[in-house]
Image: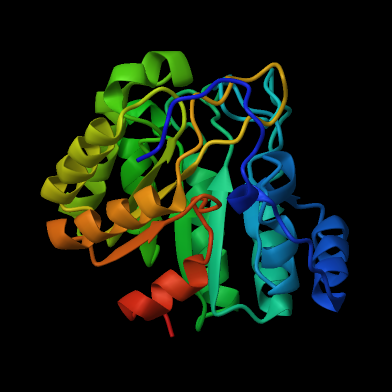
Length: 295
């Protein structure tokens, strides 16, 4: 099993081989030309070279500034600028130009947009993609909209093929990891998605101070709720100003998480050191047999 360490050398299994091809630069140019942000860049994702070279990217809407300051996240925080109402159209145009079969959309938290929290832009983005690229399945990785159901319902009603919202960590350490969020509110968002009838996904990071037993209990809680896709990956400290890594979890332990998760009833479990929310999301959709609701 994994051991708990602090400020230790990154193990060999976390060393990343950089592989790029022409698609990497194509994605970079397209995102720039459409004035779009990607969480791949903003969150310093370790898989950016692999994903962009596979011609996949996670588009981040509603600007590049978050109203929250989670201890694990490198997306900048502060007072966001006014959002661009044409962003949904440009996002859909980029998806169409890339010829994607599956796309992941995420966003910063917009707690400044009272009684909406960005939901209108979320719904319009989903609708525009379905309109311009009807064969493309849409996966959304959303904030919690402060648990405000009318906002959540706007997103649900746009019928994304997969609705994802992350618990991020086990409940005991949640306030340390994301002080402006509420773990039980996250759970209520997932419950609402499931009750609406959407295919629902969540995930968490390990290496933040949890135990393996707590990870398993969290997975059981999500499976019992009705979540069908679960991701678990290693937390990596993006800068010295963020939470330090408590432990590096061995790949054998990630394999154990996956086996236990499948036994719990999850349809898909992605578990490994470099797994992130949207890692191989297109392949997960294929594994599940997700089809576009709008083709």
